[in-house]
Image (cartoon, rainbow over all chains, first blue to last red):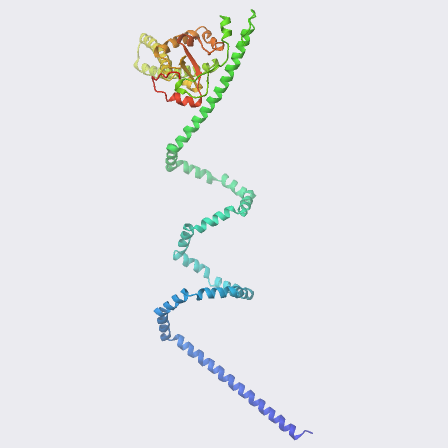
Length: 256
Length: 185
């Protein structure tokens, strides 16, 4: 048998609960409706030509340019950079991107959209590649990189591996055995430019002087050997002659 | 004679260097082998030049269709010219620099015993004596082995000596102008 007070309390509780639920539903509905309206308004604002023109005016205004210039000239850049470093922002973001696979997704999407190909086409079309190559060749960086690479023991290891590689040996053998070398040599020999170059080199004063010095040096060396041997032969011959004279039967003594 | 030869039998005496190549280092007299090699080089050079000129002359004569008698006369003239050329070769070199090309190769030098260069007349005497020394199977050069200053018959006849020249002195000799007759210091 239920108590009339209990029944009244249960009824009150249910009524309050239903009321709260009705209030929540009403609030959610209003919120969703407000969000939709706000987004629709935002879309309308973004899509309107006034907004575009306003943005253009703001972007092209001297004010923005001045603000940017002053911002970049101020210590804000250094402070921001210091804070980025201090709080390891880049590391944290990178870690998040890498752990979440975001970067891979971005790369996959970019690859699927032929972004690399388009980037390469764009760089080639805009002669960016030539400019980059010219900058690299003119700058000191390439020289430093090459110097560092040459001094690195890794280069020796790589060269040793390449040189000792049987594959390279086979490749060189195939190139030598092929008709390519013969054809190249034949073309070189038929080329007038080659003989002009040979004549130019052969007639150059430095080469003729070097050949002359080498020839003279060799002749002088040979003459030096002949001179030394002839001097030894002179002394030997005179010793023999003196011995022969001393052995004469009259027994005369040679002077000391 | 034999006694005199033995008395002079002193090998490679050191002497004072002539004034034109003067420095502190002493000189040596050139021996028989060195002088023989130098002479062979000179003879080869004289013969090679004469042979080249002879071949050229023979080629020209062959084109001219000369008679046999004329050829005989030309051969005699060629012989005389060869003898003249050979004589001039030695006389000019001895009297101007004291060194023939063969001497220069072996770094030896012909001077008067006083250190001066030979006069032309002295060079002629030396050349005649050289021929006289070689004709009797080279007997005239044997005294080089026994005499004090390594002198041969031609050296006695012309009062000359043949000395060795160092590398530095060789350059100094090469700079001596023709006709220069330096005195011993």
